[in-house]
Image (cartoon, rainbow, N blue to C red; front, side, top):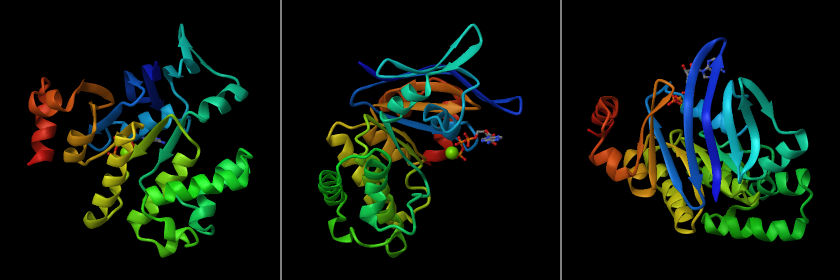
Length: 252
Ligand SMILES: Nc1ncnc2c1ncn2[C@@H]1O[C@H](COP(=O)(O)OP(=O)(O)OP(=O)(O)O)[C@@H](O)[C@H]1O
Ligand SMILES: [Mg+2]
């Protein structure tokens, strides 16, 4: 079953097309890394796929359910109720953690499931503590975000996303706001998630990580998918001159 299906996606800002004709599928358990230069449209792609931005064309399906469809140039989003259901399929982890600063770690995790989705508090609390333990943070449940390192905050953000039990997790440069010594601990947590069979779509500038963890690499350039393949294909045998040049610049 295709968990995510993106077809001919495009997005313009003020008449300027920043991504176009983006198509790819993600199966259960796939880890997809999206790489590419600054400004190539990676964040825009994630924002369109997660409804933070409206698309300018194309179609997106989660588990076969239509989020948005473009037929004969007419863009049609699903109904509000259906969009709410579809929203449950994915979680998002941002570059800058975006934790609620006035809430404890535990309450950051409980906020959406308990307050917004009215899940039972005790059960959800237990799950949240398990997720924190998995992130190595079980003893920080009562801390506030400002009392944590960037790497710890990012792991709380991952636990928070997981607490909604999404089928697929999106990451937008999860380590680029971190000092190098904190990057490793977050990448390790993401690797552990792969071991558990989590489906993930990860925008990253960490090429070694992409190579080791992803099942598939999408290389974006100037708003399009320039090349897509296994890490072996992309890193060891890139076909496109643009890919070769990008990797030449970033790997050495
Ligand atoms: N809200 C917006 N309004 C106008 N232009 C935008 C907006 N968001 C993004 N863009 C433009 O779209 C293009 C793609 O931006 P995007 O942020 O998706 O790139 P990116 O690949 O994520 O880059 P980076 O690696 O620096 O994060 C850029 O030219 C950017 O200026
Ligand atoms: Mg970006």
